[in-house]
Image 1 (cartoon, rainbow, N blue to C red):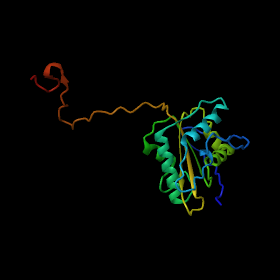
Image 2 (image 1 turned 120 degrees about the vertical axis):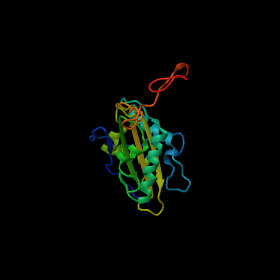
Image 3 (image 1 turned 180 degrees about the vertical axis):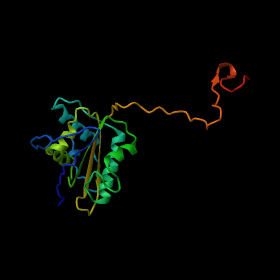
Image 4 (image 1 turned 180 degrees about the horizontal axis):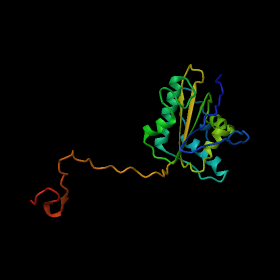
Amino acid sequence: MIAKIVRASAVLCLFAIAGCSTAPTAPAPSSGTSLYQSQSAPGATLDRQAAADMVSELRRGRGLAPVALDPALNRMAEEQAQAMARSDKLSHATSAGGPLKQRIARSGYRNGGMWENIGAGHDTLADAFTGWRSSPPHLKNMLQPNAERMGIAVARAPGSRFEVFWALVLADPNDPRPREVAQAPQPPAGQPAPAAPLPGGLMAGNGEPR
């Protein structure tokens, strides 16, 4: 039997978070079976859109905008879930993946805030979502007002303590910091600056007319 475990694993980049409370309730059944598909079964597939729909419905109920799936965040979630599965450890900072701040920098994803939920031992998407919604720190992450994008992944680890590892990443894609402008390389001291082209086949600076 797969162990059920939820850890208060709320991580934030750029903003501070606090807990909140809600009563745990299971998500309503969908028209398909994807929410209840066993992710520990060989060949199981994760319905990411169903996950985004559940998070969006939760947010709409609190007057917040829905979230959309982001391929870059899906990749980040996949890397984290696989890193936890390889190490058989529920952690935001595995030796295989590193802490969230490093993973954000490595991905190059510009953001105004990023939040991560992780879980282990939940056999279905419905179980994982209910576990996060029942945990105040995880719930707060899913209800971040500025979150607009999300990615989610699950990794199987047969024979491990938990067998299934989950990662959910939410982000505000609106980075308030200005983009860095690449500076032209400067010539060594004592050498003239490279000539800049002008219309009509002329050269400025130390260049000569053609």
